[in-house]
Length: 244
Image (tube, rainbow, N blue to C red):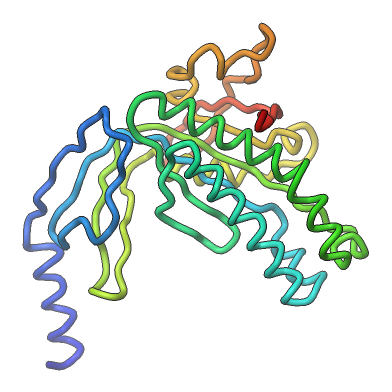
């Protein structure tokens, strides 16, 4: 079979063949893996997406050797993953210096926000000092690990794409796209100090303990972010959350 026949065969499978779509039980905290879905199956989930992103990774790669850069990437991604999983989030994607966590079930917004604030605290208080001790080249060039997180909530269609052995799960909906965009806001000045940004839907569903700290609202907003020809309201915070 030639390439043209191969491509047409795949189009027949992906376009002409209708998808079988089911809805995930809302109370469950589980998230399917790609292998749990058939190639013509999809699952609708109500989920909160967290993207956490290492800032200025291109500057890191240019400033130090590849081993030092790899140690820094691994430290950030491994610690972020550990925190997300500890709070019953599911890792379904890595994209270079960014990790995506999916939270479902009860209090999914609280757990996603707490994860982001835990990551901010861990990066500032644990990971960065450890890196400066073990990878002195970072201090020598004046590079400091920083991160930003974006969070959004909404109904999302999960589907499987690719071929056996070369496939992945894709998330289709506004929530994952908005979370990714919020993690990627890179304004100078005042905006630069806010490391956690959440969509209005996430903010609305937060418990008081995740909105307030000692009676003070941890969140500022609303602000507006353009995406796909629409404006999405969001809130921002520079608070962290310690482990104890």
